[in-house]
Length: 235
Length: 339
Image (cartoon, rainbow over all chains, first blue to last red):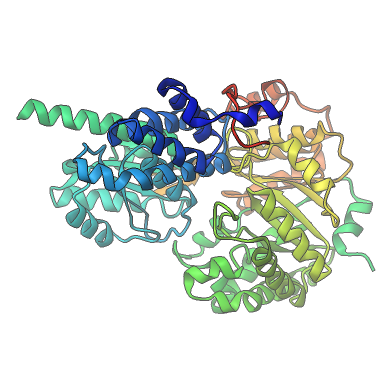
């Protein structure tokens, strides 16, 4: 726009200003700037986990809220997620090395008969943006595909997505099978997709219906926190 | 010679399109996950009966069973090589019904989205999208479609790519988008922005508008948004029959035939010329809509309050246009990259 805006030197900003700038750069989907800022903070001695939570996840939370509120739309969110991914690529090996705590793990896929995956992909990206590990089962998943993944991956959350009114009832088939096998309470079950609503989520026995990817992230965070608290109380 | 739709639009001040394709096919035994386009070949009798049910209910236009008949969608069923052929058959079946109707009925070749996200964020390039749409367009043209009918589009890039493909096929067309996210399309397009986009096309559609999305009320708010731009181009309203509800293991739409009749009259008063239904709209809904359009007088443009009192509330507070237009609320601190 104007020339004076082009002159910000990231390395000259103090920590607080740099984190604020990272919020802006995430919002604007500027991947290279995010990568540079992550490297600057690392050089200044920040812990990888601090950068993840205080800069990247906090910045994506702003993006998520504006997406939820209808201020940002899918293209902007995709750009932001892409910038976030750039930062994550630097942090990921370091997080493993330092044994940083994990936000949680999610297995996600569209249900049998449903091949519409844009919504599911968005949730996956936003969940990764929020620091979750995401195992994406792709499209058209039968009960067995979900069960195998749950057993292999031991996630906190099972996410199911459907775009069609004709495929959404299959979510209940999956949940009923979990109940039958006595596995239902081992997982937080979140469902989403354009034709769903809260009433449907309740009717089929899911823990929550998530209207969009931003709500999915918020819901996942609060359920995982609750699960951890319960585990702590039992311990 | 001009196409059948242009001829109808010259003599009539409203036209009725058809209702749902998917909902009706599922009632005939289509199982979820199967490609409806396969039925063009496997069960042509059922597709003929679907088309006939719309014509018998009074539709002037019906859409072919080819919504997912592009290579990108059919690939998910291992049938990506059959896009042109399956689309062609859908239109051939349509011709059989339309030519026996005893009046002008338009066979509109349905073209749905590719389901892919455009580059740079997704894998779909403009060139590939044009190629995909062009292939389907040629099939529909060979089968005898009067016009092509793009529907349920979210991304402006995809709408433009389809327009370009339809020009390559030399076909007149119509094109609607789905406004399902806070009054905008999933990709953020407002009703006003769609009007601008449509008018800037080198081969603009015969008519444009909205289909599917959320409830019938929201769709009419979008139609009012189109009309507010002062466009002269005919507007299409194809709304869902209410909102899907879950009962005893299956889904039904809560919009009654009486409600859809109100919707049809309101759509016309709001400025729509081509009025039809989308998901959940059965022949019985169409019959009520047709009767209402024929017997009830035109009224003044409805207010938002009148729409919600007759059809139920909106699913979002605003539609992204006018004073409530949302702008990114973060004040920019500036970026190092020039804009």
